[in-house]
Length: 631
Image (tube, rainbow, N blue to C red):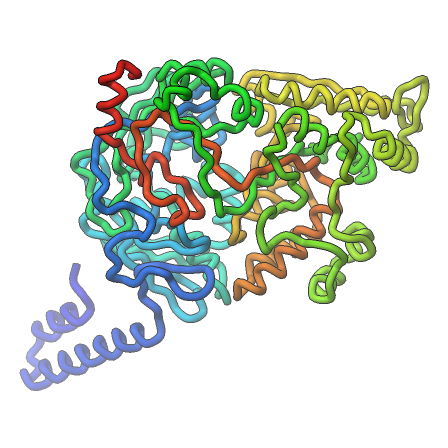
C-alpha cells in the first residue's frame, strides 16, 4: 500500500518542478503527518485493556494474573459432564441444539475478562484498543502473530466478517444490541479494525461490547452457510481444537501444540490440560453414576439432596474423591420459575404474585434442600445492586418519572420480598392471602376450581427437563391446587425443552436471569421490550417502557456508585412486577472431583472457579490413584 506522501512525491517527480520545491513539499507533508500523529496521540487513549469504571488492576507489562500458578504443569485430562444432547456446533444462530461447549475452548475474543476483576478486559487477539474522549469509535490493533488453528493469520477482515455474520444471521437479541450500538466496522489495514458506534458515549460500555467480539474465520465460510446448523466445528484461534465427537454424547478437545497465544500474559498459568472431555447425559442420575464409576472426574453438584446424601460411596470414603465447598464471590444466581407473560392468565400481576406465594421455600429448604440454600429475593442477589426496604429518596428520584408504567407498590411498600412461610408444606395464612389476591383479580372459586368471569379455569403447566425438579414442583403444585388452580408438571427431554423455551411455548419454566456485578448492554437481552417477541434471554416476554428506560440508565452509568444506585432502582421495579417466582442460591461452589487435580488459592479468583483453565493435572496424585486401582 502506498501512503499519501509517497503518492504525492511520485506525482511531483513526473514534472519539471525544481528539486528544492519537491523537497519542500515532502518536508511539509512529513510535518503534517507527524502533527496528525501527535494530535491523534494527544486526543485518544491507547491501552492494553479497558475497564467499565476506574483503573485497570494490571499494568501493560504484567507477567500473569495474580490468581494463576505460572508454573502449573501441562498435561493430563479435564473431564466433566453436560446435560442433554446436541446436534450443532454453532451457538451463534437459532437453528439446532448447540453443544454447551461448542465455542468455549476454540473461539477467542478481541479482549478477555479476568477472574479477579468484575468489569475489566485485557488484550487477547487485539494487542491494544484506541479510542477518543467521546468514545465515538474504537480501533483494535490485532496481534500480527495471532493465528487460526489451521495456521492462517487473523486479519481485520475476519473481525468485519464476524460482525456482519452476526448482524445478518445471528441470535436476534444479540443482533439487536449490535445494531443499536455499532454503526459500522471496517478494516483500516491488515491488522487494524475500526468500530464506529452509533453515537458518542460517556462510559465504556460500547468499548467493552466491541472488545468482547468473538472472531471467526472468513475463509471457513467461503463454502459454508453461516446461518445453517452443522456439526462441523467453528474454526477458531483458541488453545484447543476438537479431537473427536460422538454426536450428542461426547466431545473431546485437544490442546493445540501450535497455539499462537501460549506465552501471552493473559494465558500464563491457564489452559493447563492436554485434553478436555465432556460427556453428555440425558439423565442426571445416570450422570452421577458415571461420575462414581470414574467415567468423568470433575462434577459441580447442583442438587442439595445429592450433596447431602449421595456422596457416601466408597471412593469418597477412601479419599479418592474429594467433596469440597469452595468460596464464590460472584453475584448470586437469580434462578426462578419464570412466567410467560404472553399467556392471558398471567396478565394481572396479582395473579402472578398469588402463584408465587404458594411456593413454600422455607419448607422446601428444610425438607428437600437440607438447609443449604438462601432464598433469592432480588434479581441481583448477594450484591450492592440489590434494593432493600422502603424506597430511599435517591431511588425515588429515579423511578418517579416512570410512575405511570410502574406498580404503585414501588413507592408505597418495601422492595418486594416473598412471604416467609412456616415449616409445614401448607402455610394456611399465606394461602389465604394468596386466595384473596386471586379473588380481587377476578379469579374466584367455582365448583372447587379457580375460574374467571368467562368460566375459564386458571391453569398452569410447568415446563421441566430434569427429574430432580419433580420433588420440588410436585409439592408446589399441591399448594396451587389448594388455591383451586389446575397445575401440572410436564417433564420433556432437553431438546424439546430448548425448542419450547426458545419459542416461548410454555406457561412457567425454570430459568436463570444472567446478571453480573457490572450489568450493562446484556440487560437489554434479558429485560428489553425489543426482545420480548423473539428468541432471546427475555424468556418472560417482558415489555415495559419504564423498564426499558431504567435499563438504559444502568447502561449509561458513569461510576460504580451510580451503577449500583441505578441497578437498585431497576431491581425494585422488576420485583414489584412479579414476573417470576424466585428460587434459591448458595454462595459457595459445591464441587466433587477425583483427586487428580490441584488448583491455586480459590480466594484469589472470586469471580470464576476455572477448573478447566487454571487448575491442573497433578501427576503424583493421579499415579497414586492408579497404583491403588482407583482409576
